[in-house]
Image 1 (spheres, rainbow, N blue to C red):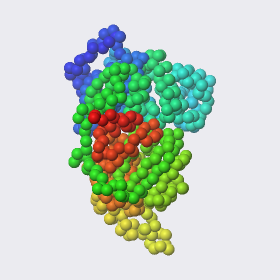
Image 2 (cartoon, rainbow, N blue to C red):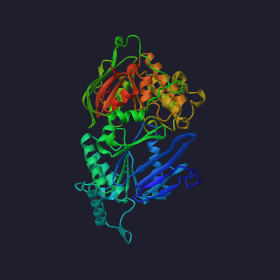
Image 3 (cartoon, one colour):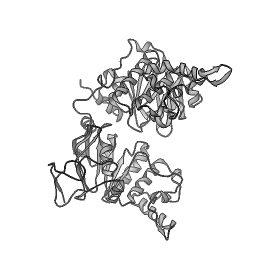
Image 4 (tube, one colour):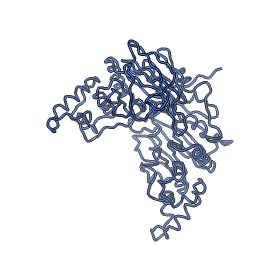
Length: 536
């Protein structure tokens, strides 16, 4: 059956317009028609159509914020659409919640795995659906069902009795997929599945996905890695600003065309509402080198990375998710231990990889996960600012007791410099907006006097006004000689606030670019591991 779809509007069960559906022979496995979703007045999805055939791997691509995750969460039942229709095998369905999605054969594998490491593979695969008799679990049935699910993926070699925590990351991801498929999923959604995998692990995953395609499972492959899309997928849908701009056969596409569709002919740039445009000093080469990274290798991902950052320079570490830039940032602060290589700050090699040693050497770090890794939520704003500089708040050099008065006196100037209102100083930091929380973390390292500030996704989850304030603070720090390293996946942000970009692809530095002469297309291609050809 095929489905003939029109977008005329009446009432429907999704709270918005209704798309009239005529079902004819050979219906697609999935049809999402006219899907619209708004958040607080912002249109996240605008009449989006997505058609998925049985036995096809269909790529869903677009920049961050294009609407990919929102669309898939609507499919899985995590969100409710404001308008539109969903059909499975030609039948209109109501995916009211995740349980309903599972019942319809829809399985979603998120970037963050949901496995319990202390349980066995068999126990994880059957979790919540354990076979029992008279209330007693059947271990034999658990193992048999797990073996069948793994065989369906072509990975029967995995030991179903092994604790999941002992498996390699790639095997854990395959177990997660087997867990979803064991619910009899016929539509499988994978959100950035290779972001944390090595090349060999990715190849194993692709082999399993091709095996699934042969069994008739329909796969949605959400990815920023366009070389993988070209190698693996059958068709591709591109989202931009919440709308579908193209759905094409992958065989008719190449890397440059995918980048062009993703970015559009008119590529956005940061303006006065988003942030200032960075400008390098008149003689950047005359500034001293403050950070030197030489042949650094970290974990299984990062290999032989080298770059330099000068005093007063803002350098961006850019790359697709899982390309290695986050691991390098954490290694700079001693949060990850390098396998080999050297990190030198202001002429001093960091020989002890630990955050305390890095902070003493003049390195500050702003995590992308401020809630769990950077803030003490029940402590006041002032206490969160001074926590890295407690010695300066002692009653006297010989009395290591905190002085609330000295603590407040120390924090006031830096809080004022980052624009946190005095009325917030004594409030618990958890009560502040995300933007003010981020400003408080910047103030912490200002008070510490850090010579090098490493910022991982510094504007994630903050509004436009706070984003502008944070950009201004970073530029102000650079103007005073601080070296700033910014890890970002936002192309506009990278090109707007950085003097220079170190671009990562597959765990290595693919290129170094000057932002003053780099376009979005050139940066995005470099993140895919290829340089753009400039017209002569």
